[in-house]
Structure formats: C-alpha cells, structure tokens
Image (cartoon, rainbow, N blue to C red):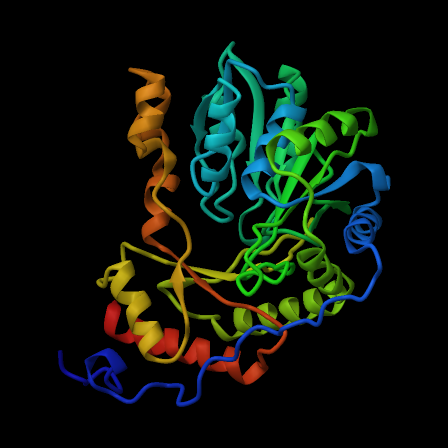
Length: 374
C-alpha cells in the first residue's frame, strides 16, 4: 500500500493514534451489607418495579437460562431464539427436551425481528426467547403482539440491557421470565473475572410463577455467593451514574462518526432508553475492502481495544440444522441480516472511566482506517 490517502496505519508501520493505553473499567468496592444477596435482590426488584420475591440471584449463568425456560413451561416442542446472540438459550432449550429454531434479526439492532419470528413459528412452538442486543431493546410492540396472537410466553435475555426501557417499560419485565447475566463489560460484573463466579439475576414479573423459579434455582444453579453479590450490589447502586456516563459517551461518539460513508453508528429511537452495554459500529461490507478480523486488528494497533461483536448466525450451526432436519426455516435466504452482520459488527468498550477525548480518538481511528479500507 501507498500512504497517499493519509498517515499509514499502525499495523503497516505507521504511528498509532493513541500513545496511552485505553482506560480500564472502574473497579467498585464491595458493599458492606450484612446480607448482600438479599439486598441485591431487593435493589434489583426496586429498579425494575417488581416485588422482591420476583427476583432471584443465581450463581450460574447456565442455571439462570434453564430456570427461565422452566418458568415458561417449556417441555418439548420448539422455542424460537434469535439467530444472533441467542446461543445461551440453545443449551437451556435442549435441556428442556425442546428444539431451538433460529429467527432472523433486525439489521439495525441485531435483535429478533417480527418478520423473523413469524417465519420461525410452527404449531410446535412453545415459547419465544428474546435477546436485547448491546443495550438496545428489541421491537417489543410488534413481538408482543405476535406472542399474544399465538398465546406464547416470552422469555428475555436482558444481560446487555440493564437500565434500558422500551416506551417507559423496563427491559426484563415484558416476558414471563428474564435473565440478567453478570460479567465483563456489563454494568454489573459481580467482580468477575477477579471473582470467578458466573453470576446472574432471574426476574419473574408475575409473582404467581416465582415459586417455580425458586425451585428451579435449587435444581439448576444455587444461590449467588455473598462475595459476588456484594460487588454486584455496589455496582447496582452506582448504576444511574454508570448509565449516564455511557450514554453521554455514546452520544459524543455518534456525533463524531457523522458523515462517514462506510461506518454506521449505533441506532437510536424515540421510544428507546438505551443502556449502551457496548458501542457497536457496523461497517458497510459492500464498501469495505478489509476483513472484519483485519479491521479489528488495525483498531487495536491504533490503541482501541475493539472486538468482533457476535458469533456466526445460529441458522448455520450444524447441530441446530440437524435437529430440524430438512426444515426450510433454516434456509440461507431467510437470514440475509443474520448471515451478514457477524462480518460487519465491531464492539468498542464503554464505561465510566472513559472521556470525551477517548471518544474523539475512537472516531479518529475509524476515519483513519476507513481511508485505507474503502
């Protein structure tokens, strides 16, 4: 390559945009409550506006997803899952002796689309599993209407969307059960990876089903330990400031990305209160000459710790296709967005230790790489 388009990329021997390391996420001191698990459940319930008995802290991601599936009454048949970011549901559905059926997603949000849901349904469908991707709520009005029409329960993976809402309703309260997995990058980490607990919260908005979730917790994963709960509780109490910081940074980055022809900023909506779990850009693959892997490597070399945002679509998974046999619902022609987005989406960390200057640098890095990639 020549450098007539501007400074050479760092991966090609040029000087990186950032000389200093990208800041790490804040480390929160554990809360000192005498009963941190109970306090965490109470604070979580207050945030979502549900009774305290409807929130359970789990010590296992796997157990939390299995519990949500059990609360939905799944035992056989099929469960529709989003083709992207729906992997956590698949094992839970199989353990309920059911088959996961992938549904097409929205190009803008990577969440299950209404059209994709309709196409994935059959007379064997027993539940609908949603994932609110990257902090952006799914199109709940359309999805709820379809679920009501077919009298199907909805279960939510709201791990990326703590604090998000759709038309004023908190994410995680639309379905019969929801999972908020804690971990790196999320607003609540539970101390992971320093504390090696894969914590999760399960919310059952209808108190009539709470006893079912409590029994499932005993079977699938047990209660969360006090050490992780104390960290998660402190993080939850800091959530308003955390979300405000993420939103401010996201708005600034979106503004800085204006005018780019090959990079698409995160979507916004008048009905959505976004959680910005990460900032995810989409590169227009028709205009972009580099692979996604090369683009991510170039961003890292410039000082931005980017990563590929999602795994390949579930409709390509051999085990899922095998369970469905010759079913035409997994045909490539039905997954134009899910088939393309894994090669276009790049995630950039957002947290309260970042500054406007960091967002300026991210935009500068993307503009620099765009010059060499289009």
